[in-house]
Length: 391
Picture 1: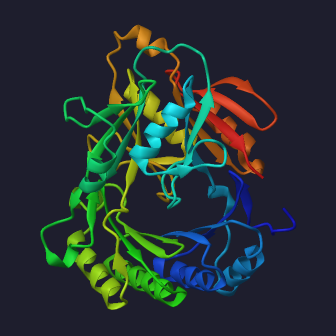
Picture 2: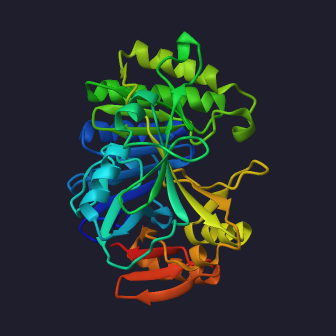
């Protein structure tokens, strides 16, 4: 890694770093410098720091130098990237279905990728193994109501009338979002499980100033807002359910903060794009929810939801998808024995791969097979994750 410095690792072929920061404002200062370096740099700004992804190594040293100048240190130990893998005898049909549902773009590996680089990549692998029963893994996808209506891939089913299946029988709950509220002051915001507003910007200055303004407003309110900086965009996001009082547990009404953020964006002449918000999460069915959930908390380094009765677990920095667990009837023995058509793939830096594998096995995982840079592990009920060593 000498050519791009010790701050950086390569995950899924992307040069990536995380810099710890004590506040959104201090992280936004570094994000602002990066916007001036290149419009193509991808930044995920969080209350505890920021992740930076580069399409080339050209700006790596300049970013590291700017971080040092601001007193921010890199922390490669937190880096990981979770993606979803479909095994299919009909990859083209599966690909078309999920591209429509997610509004993703074709990926270089024959899978699909989020153009906004926020939600998990979909990888599609050829397989002829027969698996006729329902998976124990499915996805939830929430998009604005108009986008759901346009993308709807046929007749829906299920108790809420939102379940669709791809040609292999893999399920997705495609859920229409709604306006955050009836107030004019929050008209830019969509409730898609997260509260989210996506703003188009036309210059690095406008982008830098909007990210800085959002960071300052969120810090003042004590709210850990997610601020994602993308080419031509600034995305403001509460995190799943965090706009609801029982989820964030703070002395604030998130709609007040959303209104202030909208005012700041409009004063900077940023334009909201109401069709862009999207939220995707992963569901696992388990006969022993507590045991399976505990495994994934340890394997991914996730945090349990603070709310009583909620089975969710989430990335400590909200950089990877939420996992939700629901009870499976223990009597469904054949379905429990069947290997899923869907599994997860976790990319971690090469210098952390063995430690992550050890932690996963210690949490109850079974090592199924391995190669030089890939380890396939099953949880206590057979749901699989492949750990992939980056660089």
